[in-house]
Length: 256
Figure 1: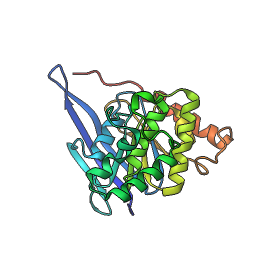
Figure 2: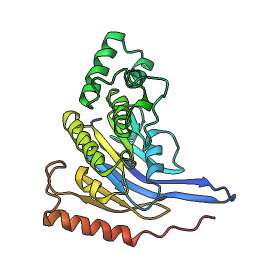
Figure 3: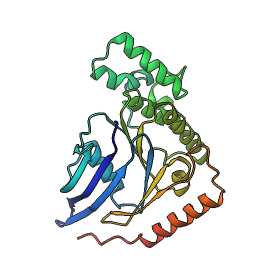
Figure 4: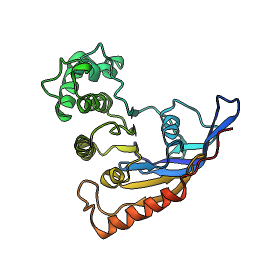
């Protein structure tokens, strides 16, 4: 992906169980810079996950434009990692990671090399023939990450992928993500509720309002993720600004 993804006036509504309409997103305008990590923060239910689904092509916006290089954006070349690993229980680690490559009809020898390299990168060498139920939560999530990354997506969408992990494992997974990003410089759009996680991994933090979600604030963080001092005055100011924005926009519209 050589050019930024630009969203202009993107809106999305859904039918509610009560027969009304829920406005999930309203007039979202945002630039996702190429080769950088953009983190979306906002109250639960503000449409962050919906926005990822629109970009991934799982849903269609009701209005607005998604463009890249002045042309309509295509989700081809996009990969998505969910909060749950969603692995195939009947496949081994190696088979799970190889699944997308096999569907693309990548030759067997090349596929084996790519899978072996990616399994090594995420620290799962020796577990190739293990099934998901035999893995810890962190190992399952590393397998899910490897399954997407081995396809070398230009745009990586991540929907709270580390939310269910304990604090220590979560920090290790964040470090792994930054290590992999440094190697490939992919564009990453990452959803979280955790301000500290955003400060650790993001180049750019986007704060959403409560439902209907729209962009309230965009902050460019100082220094590079992975090397910044989270206790610095600059990061303390960013933390305060983000928390203030979240506190000011935490009230949802009632469901119709």
